[in-house]
Length: 270
Image (cartoon, rainbow, N blue to C red):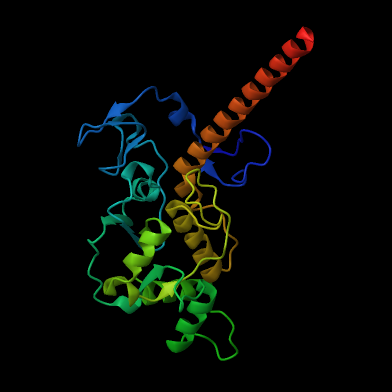
């Protein structure tokens, strides 16, 4: 069952095909993580697993490529959205805490999502790769879908994301284990993350970056329009976004009502 309900007009996620939020709404209080026994709501961000009441009930997302997320050691686990991807696509998403970085035996087959000086978009990168491998037709037309998918699988084994503040990410990128990886840059989009860094609104939360990368990958490698297959990666993000939006809306209504009541009292006094 999918849900497209919104808390009001202007919801930026109204077109996403998301699983129902009923089980999240109905879950009362907090639970103990079955591994570390810490008190958690919905999932344990330390152990990267859902609470017992949600085990086997959350949406499961199949990804076309393996994903590694390298989190800065100073990034607070409870504030990071990287864990969302690990819980909703556990077979293909792995989290690491810097300076722990996997050893990539073939760096050329690993993509790093980072806006370096040499970074290219997926649409720029994939045709070049295909041409270099002799898999692109002479007139530059794209390959049939099935062949393009095999080409992507052959060229790239996984994609890496950095989970940190912008200033932290620059220091991490200086690490030789990351800086030599081919970089890809995403199309600029507005973030809807509720925890801002006092930066431009195009600085995405990690789960937003993962989701948009996958949709761009689909658009760059498939003849078929995107069908929402990765939308549930945004499941927790959208739920929290809407809860916070509803809370702000209610607070605004109360503030306006309080102001109107005060103005009426002052008018009566005069």
